[in-house]
Length: 513
Image (cartoon, rainbow, N blue to C red; front, side):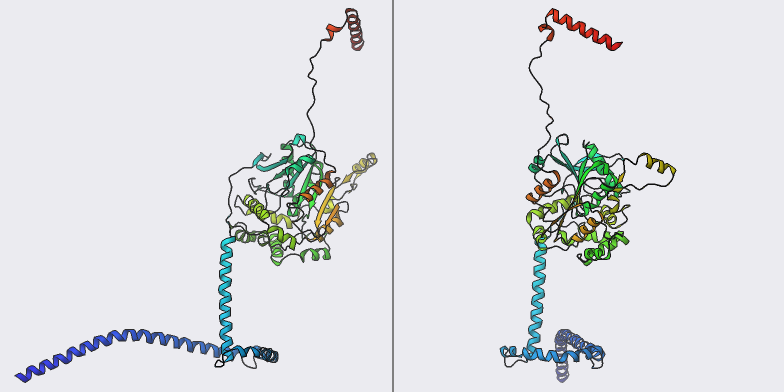
């Protein structure tokens, strides 16, 4: 009986020990399983990488492969270069394999360079990125005959005191706030100039035009002048892509213009009158992206929406050369990086994109490269050709003493920077070939922006060329004699008065008879 109890106790002890050991082994085996799984995954990754390496080596690394054949050609020069650089191995530890050491050094260098690049880019982006602000409406607006409102800005003297009136259509990504950047009010007063700038349809605070073209653009200019009380002829000032609307004014409203002042005026880059050499000299100055944008504007204008939404319609500021894919010279580059220009540019862009609609920009880009409806040769001063038919022959015989001319009769002045890469000098050469009567002023060492933006002396030279010696505004104040009016009848003698009255009566009677 006693033996049976001892056997039972021994059996229970063995079972408890086995259970304890089993519980502990289960706890340890879970961690071991995790470690073993990680080791297995790593081994499988290594084997997979070796397999990929072998496949790549067998495919392109063999001697009979394309890369292998070219590598053999480079083997000799590479060995020469490595031989010359072998003296660097002297600076490595003696117990390190040079191949392994240099591989580690190159890898670490690449990682460090990438980390520095990412940090620098992120820091610069955080500092330079500025959101576009939309300001409260502040423009004066005039109602046009078709019911649209046109926003405008007046500078200089009043219209009734102005000797000269200048109307300035703005460029592609601009607004009425641009005009002649940096122009001083005192200079306008000195020359007696009344300057008008306005927002193109859909830009700034101007209403969009449902069927906008170059003729409607010229008519808007004429209506604006009439609404502002400009009864005499006015000057039109076209700068860069704003020259498109200046050319249109010369074509469609020449009777309203006194002259044109053009600054690096843009033309249609696909103009059929351009020679191959002129087209090559123009297109070679532009970046590949700018050429692509011109192509898309001509063939697929709706695709421009994608690019505009990622640049100036993205709600963030950036530099003009990046947005418009411009190639700039040193002086232009220095100017756009100036804080004064940057402040002006950002405010002008904010006003230009106020409506947040891409359609006006697409229309403007498409008009630049499409058929204008006229050519620059139509602006050339020339005798009017006689029409066919008997009526035209009789009209010619009756009026041959007074020869009729077509084209623009007024002066055209063109200023062109010789270091301009946005509108190259070849464009002005083409214009001068077609319009030999235009006065071209070539500006050595000047770029696209440097002569037009924030240059007081340049602005004075421009006005002196156009208007001569400054004479100030008109003086329309009439001096009145404020002395008391005397009654002549009181001073005349009775005899003299009777004689004069009789003479006046006789004169009246003779007139009536």
